[in-house]
View (cartoon, rainbow, N blue to C red):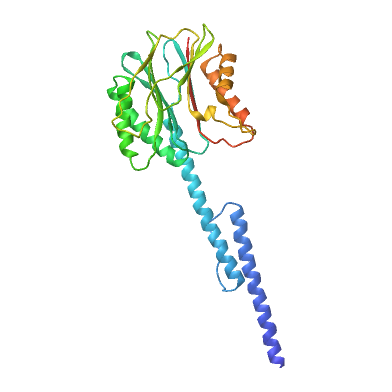
Length: 312
C-alpha cells in the first residue's frame, strides 16, 4: 500500500510538471503572437484538453499568418494602383486642372487620367468600374491599359471609347461587369470642348459670367455591355475665363450622413460658388473636405474621384 501511494504521488508530481510545462509553452507562444511574432507554434504533446487548446492556438496562428499575408498583398496592390494615377496636374495653356481619387478600401474601381492628344489638345478621362475593392480595381487596371493603348491612334472621343469598349466588352462578357466613363477633350487654342459620356454622370459646368450651372450631357452606353455600340461626340461653345468644369464619380453626390441624407448636387454647387475665385486645387480640396465633414464618423461607402478644370 505504501509503495502504491508513492507511485500515485510521483505520478501526480509528474503530471503537474507536464501541465506547468504545457502552460508555460502556451503562454510563451501567445506572448510572441501578441508582439507580432507568428514564427512559433505550441507543441501538441498530449491528447487531453491542453492538446486541444494547443491545436486551436496553432490554427489561430495559421489564420493570422494568412491574414497578414493578405494585408501585405493589399498594401502592395494599393501602392501599385496609386502609382497608376497621375502624379501631377497637366500643364495646359489657359486652364488650371486638379484631380484626386480617394478609395473606400485599399483598392478601388475609380480612375482618372490625362492624355496628350494631337494638336496640343488634352484628354481627361474619369471612370468608375462597378463595385469597389479588389475586383473593381482589377477591372480598372484593364480599362486603363485599353485606354492607354487606344489613345495612340486617337481621332476623337467617340472613336476612342468605341475602341476601348470593344476590348472591355469581350473581357466582361461572362462576368456582367461594366464601367462608366466620361472622356473630355480640351482644345487650348480655341477653348472648345468635345466629350463622350459612357453611362457616367454628366460633368457639371459653372459659367462664371452668368453664375449659372449647366451640364455636359449626352447619350452613351456604359462600357462592357455591347462591343458594337457606336458613341457620338458632344460639343460645347468655348470656355470663358472663370468657367469651371467638374467631372466626378457618384461617390460624391451619393455620400450619406447619419440622417441618411445624400450629399447631393446642391451642396456641391454651393461649394463651387464659394470657391469660384480660387484655384482648381483649392476647390478640389474644399469639395473633398466638405464630403468628409458631411459623412462624419460613418465609413466611406464608395470611391470618390473628381477632376476640376478651370478656365483662366
